[in-house]
Image (tube, rainbow, N blue to C red; front, side, top):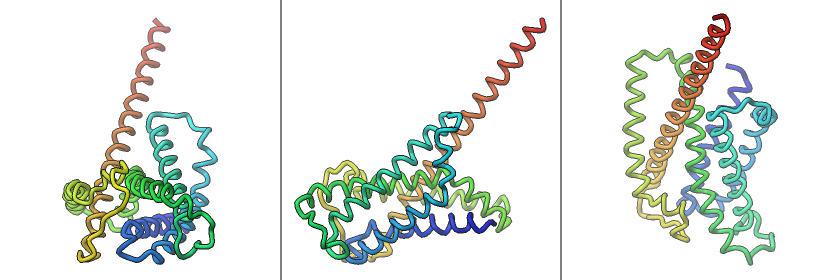
Length: 240
């Protein structure tokens, strides 16, 4: 595996881990939340530097539905991440307390919640769009058997099924729609249970993203086959 690819995977893995910890901000403490937020900001910048080729070629592609959906998804992830970072700076009670922005605290709090939860969902779907690459890497290095592959697939569906329950249990939909102005935490609940619920929700949206990407790829191939068939028929008619 190339060094750049290893760095990309490590960066994305660290971003995913930090995102799960940031969601639990009241359980890890506000100061830790702010420092971890700075960490994910650095990783976000590094991620875009490592994938700068994608941004440079954005306007050069011959767009298909797949490319358009992926571009919109990536834009959504970028906007929610930037919204989380900027609103986080405005809300800072420790790291950036010197900023004279107390007057916008209420507005910034809502923006931060909106961007955090939508960013969590969109980033999970984004991971799903790249899941084929991850599966390919795992297959090459672990030499999985067909039984192992189906076992992992079954586990992923069980995780996603629980993710539906966890999504409702944690009121994530209401936070995404800003029906609540504050996030409610059960401080008596073991931290690991909270994290596992969000891992399941992430698994759910990774699966959604993966199968959406697969469907769009198949649609692209089918369209290309139809265009090729039409071209062949036109050529035959011209000879006739």
